[in-house]
Image (cartoon, rainbow, N blue to C red; front, side, top):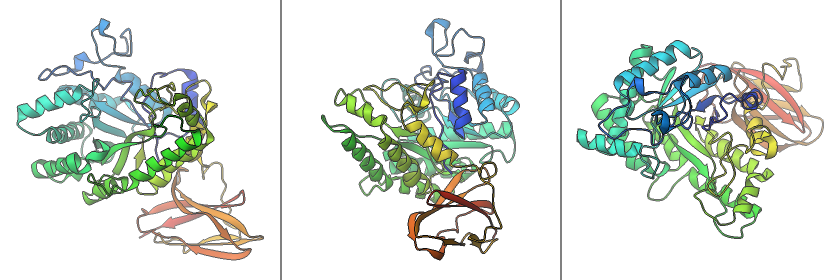
Length: 459
């Protein structure tokens, strides 16, 4: 299920910001930027204690050394925003946080977060990243050396430790249910970091699926590296960048299909997720800045974002895709935001793209089901996941069919813009074995006309 979130919470309670959630159904927010996960840890072996955390009463909710606290916003505001927007919370727990800190944080979330919301738990952010500003990698390296294990092994150990601490606070059944611990790494490092980490967990703690909900990496794409490239060429580069990430036949063997297969091999409940992603034309390059920004604001970028999130992620079997970010400036360092103006989110096509992709029509509110429609039927119903769509057309037309869950989220494209002749037509769906039991809705689109049917999957 596609569940983009965002990571830039700088406009936390600004009214236009909150109103954006009324028009787009994000399922999760990742609070990495807001809570200041990067570069906020002390030098090992010092630990971050619960008394060191940011408070709602502090003079600033960003990293301000003058008040003696390097971290960003407080956890109380994280909980408040998650409750207001009814979105799952993805939290980045400091790598230096003591066991007491983690237990206190878990208790606060258990007591104050809406019990219907899930919590994604990640150890810090990009502990593999040795670039300036990611000093948590140095903490991880020093801690690993002190424990006599490798850096990737320590990352795995710490992630399991978080799972154990959260599990002890939330109680039996919480892990891989409401508490979803994610083991993240760099996209090319699937067999260099991720597989060894899973093997380490297996050896020292037992099956990783007892602790780890999903594995995750980035899903960025980019273009326009060459001076003089047109907007069309940049978009073509973006498309190629996405396609090249689907399957990696090179030395790393770390394409998205391979990440998905790895999650399935280890029986991880959440499989494969993307902790950050979206168009990225940054790095500080001064080449072709104007066209790179124009490409971000073009209608074509909407198509590439849909390709990246839908065809090259959800349709492959990806579970949760996080968009970096909701808002940002567009400059030579990056053009990540869905919009560059929270007051005017539709200055470009990217916000509308996700609005369309996520909102597609809520079956239980905006699209009444006509079970008596003789021109459209789904059978057998109940079904084992394989079913036939039968429909009649007055004229030849191109048709599309999609499958939705009861919350109105599209989970599968059954067929897309396929030509059919006038008269009676039928088509059998493919690959229904992976559908969980439950209620679904089939949306048939015929030349702008939309028709719906219910279908129940049972085993």
